[in-house]
Length: 300
Image (spheres, rainbow, N blue to C red):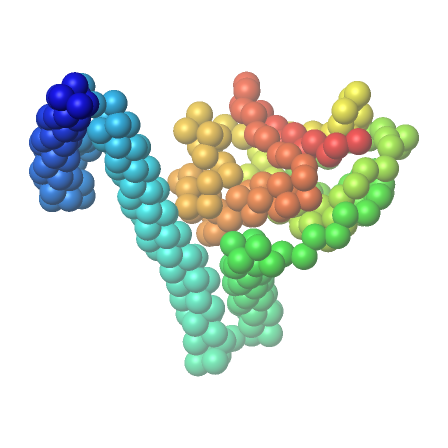
């Protein structure tokens, strides 16, 4: 009986000692957490607890993991807020520029005595500016649908050869007017691929509009096939880009100086990339020897 009492006494003492040190560890952990609550918004400080207790160590590690996740979310939130501000500033600029021109040329037509030829010239400029506004509104609408995950996608077998030829016909006169030589190397026998016709046409529209604005003298379009993909390669010469520009071509909020000088919203390529991803395809850009190349890949 005495042995049992002694054993119980020893166990009780051990439990009390365990409780005591656990309480010390918890108190230390609580102190660290309270400090962390004050510092978490201003630093990357983590909880540091020196203890032989493995459970307390695991708890501290778990809290530190939460801190890391929280800080990552904070950084992402800050980045997104900054991108939103930049996008808003870009949109405001792109809206204001054509609107100011439209108002100015409209006043000239209304208040000055002009010849019929001059009126037609100014009205043509107004029409061009209105077209720029319409393109910007279309881009903003596309982005709103993409962000809301409401952009309609319907994948069906289509001929990229036919879609590409149709798009090229639409822009053929524009290439001629801008003095851009069109070089074609199209494989008529490429297999059908699953894609959204509307999305693919919009992507090609954005790419060709971009080339007409910025190509120096030529545009080369190639359609081919590999073991896994049907590919479209669209190249043009350009001396106005830098490595920094190319890396960020598909960034919504980035605009190279050359883009801004041409009153482009800078959204066309960003939209093209996001639309390609919606239809499970890819688009990449490469810049070498003053030649910018866009590569579109569609899974066979």
